[in-house]
Image (cartoon, rainbow, N blue to C red):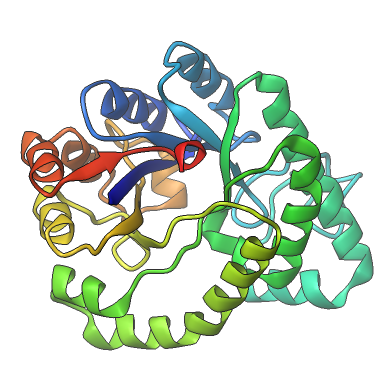
Length: 283
């Protein structure tokens, strides 16, 4: 059986993102969305999700490159005076691992984000982290610990097989190979820990190396090569550019990804290749 999860990340970041996710679910192939509970348009995203009971929504934990839910007084070692997390992923990861005080604040913020999601009243479909910070062993451990209290059942595994990725995109061979080799041990650890915790996950993702640059032809080529199992395609669609997107992801082609999600050719390819479109909670 070939199952396909199609996720829109950064739900709540900006209204054009929310518009694209709503339309891509109504008219296209999108099955799930990952909500940034502390983002500026989160309330708008929640309102749209409540009108779309078939759209499954998960939590997109933000621990770098974004705003916290708690104030800077509560987590002073995690954010600046404006409540902004660090944009230096490696430095943040070292702080999470080596500083006990930071880990305590990190757990408090993760719990606050789970609690904010719970208050929306939306069923929790899955959890993943912005910039895939849940690959960090400390973050994953806290995610699993806190998530147990909020009904966590599924987590994204951001594993993109090298050969399928290369054959589909036909570019950046060395970059894909190096990243695949470097991430492989971390992916293996994530899979083991999720399995031990009885947490569901996808078998593979697509979008890790081409994030922000997916288009319809690329997705069709991918669908024709995928083996049986559960594949997640994640993307960052938007109906138009805006200040939030220009600041956070200036080189992403958000509108192109939105068009791919509502493309008749992509929908036809899903049917022709025998995929069943699902959400994490339906695994």
